[in-house]
Amino acid sequence: MSEAVGKTTIQTKQSNLNLEDAPLEPTPEIQAVWNNVHQEMRQEFGEAIFRSWLKPLMLRAYYHGTMEVSVPTRFMRDWIHTHYAERISQMCAQSNPEIKRVQIVVVQSAPIDSGAAETTASSAAQEKANQNIREEVASISSPLDPRFTFESFVVGKPNALAHAAARRVVESASVPFNPLFLYGGVGLGKTHLMHAIAHAMNESWPDKTVMYLSAEKFMYQFVKALRANETMNFKEQFRSVDVLMIDDIQFISGKESTQEEFFHTFNALVDQNKQIIISADKAPSDLSGLDERLRSRLAWGLVADIHPSTYELRLGILQSKREKLGADVPESVLEFLALKVTSNIRELEGALNRIVAHADVAKQEITLESTQEVLQDLLRAHDRRITIDEIQRKVAEHYNLRLSDMHSARRARNVARPRQVAMYLAKTLTARSLPEIGRKFGGRDHTTVMHAIRKVEELMSDDAQIAQDVEVVRRALTG
Ligand code: ADP
Ligand code: MG
Image 1 (spheres, rainbow, N blue to C red):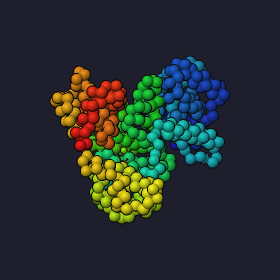
Image 2 (cartoon, protein in one colour):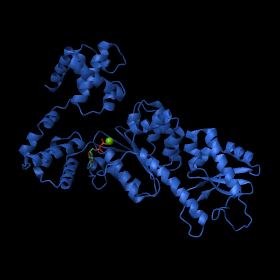
Image 3 (spheres, helix red, strand yellow):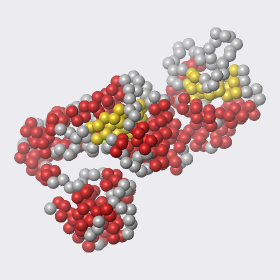
Image 4 (cartoon, helix red, strand yellow):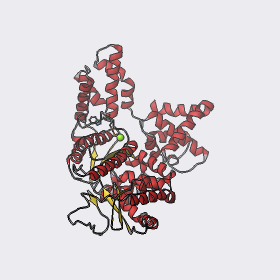
């Protein structure tokens, strides 16, 4: 496929000779001009821009003063067209006044035409360009967990809509809804479903490039590109994919420039009719700290929520897991677990793994009794689950502070220290992640939480008073 910029009609001496079939081979002189100009671009625009944008340009044909050069994507063509084309034309004309125009065409990978050697040669080049893009995409994407497939995903009422939507995205030749927005609480299967889509996409549509990554990694890549002055490259990489999947978008709450960049990427891909799939822990409208434009845009497509699991779904998941493990677990034990471990599916799986591993090592049969014994701590915690709110209340009480001090921006030591203690307890007594804890403490960054935890650990070994404070509050909570 080739597509010409602008309205220039391509004229050839023999009217039946179509340039698309047989590009006119540039003469060695013209090729030499191009090679020189190509090198000059490197000097003039610098290494980063050259590598991101100009290096892939290839001289394809020359006819009547028009130099035709190709790029692998439409996005690239448009960008070069608006930013560099004029200067490139000038450079060519300076080098050889015969050259009047430079025309940039998109040459995507085309089926190899058996007759034409030129086509084969340029197909090989395109294949190489595509291969490069693929490699770059692969290097940015997060690895996919081979266990997270549609086959291993148990469907029940709480996740039926999300599952059907995910299937639909894979099965449709065109984009059925954009974006697909999946949301639900921790450990309910969002990541599993995202990976399942990516696996199935790769299988059903091997020509499509699928990029999957966490919002955290998106931000990391963006910041890295900013520092290295390679944002153009970053844009190109993200805009060249067919399917972009971002997991845990809530992570970019409050990160304005990352949101801005994501918003542009999002729009560019939607405009090109590329599929976007997003997951979050909340509905778009509840994602505070997200720009209003972005929030409303996220709700444009299909919003599917995953509800907390039901007893039936938990039992179904345990049965499927038992089969995979090939373990001898009585039904009564599965029922017991499905009844008791209700928080999330990750923990439910963990509980099953533990009893199976224990039976294996102890060379014992799995019974209801052994299960209760092995899972003692987990079951107790479930009987009385500690929340971050509770921790904040107890810490505030202990230090004679107001509850609002736990969320406030005040940095005075007498407030900041107890707040750090509360963060430390939140990390050690709950299953919440650092970003989640940060949000509960007035929208602080996860690095702040990490710093707090280190600080408190350090203080506890040096300062008996702090160690005692922590212990008193901990006992009050776990009592
Ligand atoms: P989330 O991303 O929503 O926090 P995950 O996708 O990481 O949750 O799921 C946590 C664990 O639970 C994973 O091991 C996943 O395989 C499992 N899981 C969740 N839902 C299901 C399901 N419906 N069927 C099978 N396994 C599931
Ligand atoms: Mg997840």
